[in-house]
Length: 87
Image 1 (spheres, one colour):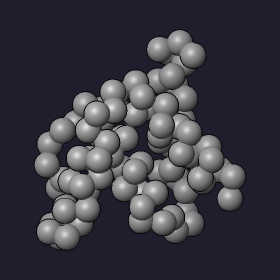
Image 2 (cartoon, rainbow, N blue to C red):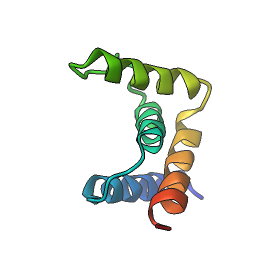
Image 3 (cartoon, helix red, strand yellow):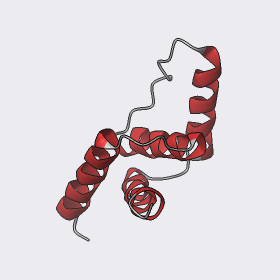
Image 4 (cartoon, rainbow, N blue to C red):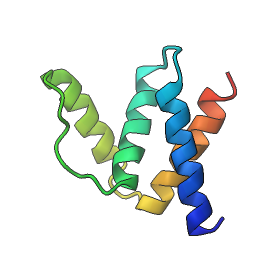
């Protein structure tokens, strides 16, 4: 997949998740969060007002810290296709 095609597929997957209305498991949301942040090279601290949510988000980022932005996009797309669209 070309770089341009990857970015298009990633944006489509992000839009799909953003428009999805059914509840999703917390562990899936945390993986998507980490991959999204890495794909966008956003390494700022999580911005929730709830310390516990910040801790979970930070942990998700730590677990995925060795993933490259390209691989994060690929993983995000794969999660959307296998875990959300297949429901």
